[in-house]
Image (cartoon, rainbow, N blue to C red):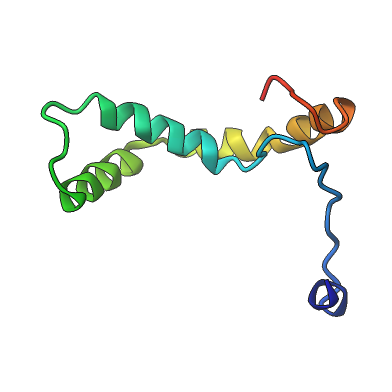
Length: 88
């Protein structure tokens, strides 16, 4: 905490029961779905890494932008729910 204070970094209060608001979770879910569609399934970590990189590169920039732009709504929903379940 001292580092953040010394660096003049403001932290958001994070409710203990809040869902993970990190937008990367939605991208990982998408990559997992795409990976499960692979025929045949990847037989090695190297093949899995290759598939994930290929699929990651196909994600349009608008998907990333929309996830970032959704953060204000997400935080508002979590605050309204007092850290409990939201639609996100």
